[in-house]
Image (tube, rainbow, N blue to C red):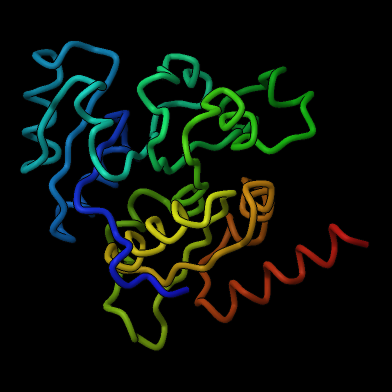
Length: 221
């Protein structure tokens, strides 16, 4: 995927848990200005942000979403705390997962044939949603990144229905230190949900392409 001149200039993160703060730190290392927001007032999270993600700014959600790229890193069961109006027209990365063994059974996700990201997209109908960064541990995200061209550089999949949004996310992943691999439409995110080979392992771009092709062939048979 050609990512030239398509990358974001700023990152907004909704959520200040382990995943959100790891994404923030890696983004800061990559040279991005980063804003972080939660459902709590800014003054309640400002010190936490200063300590855990030095260089990032604690802001209101309405400010965080003004970044070129917004990362949703709230617990999945709290996704309805998001404001669809604020995210309308925004390029958004969904890093959330439905993982029943860890989070418990959630009827909404158990009984819907769609992927979790498709359900989130339906809740945020005017956002340009891309599924990615969900299949790498928060520790690994800060440890495994390598410069472009490294032979054993780790790859990360992305899936979405908007090509421009996917190009922006691909450029972002590349700058974070990972080879972006376009898995296809948002529904293709099923191939890297919890429990899959991609979710459970680390792959180079060639390996990831092969696993995605096998998953596509299996779903078509």
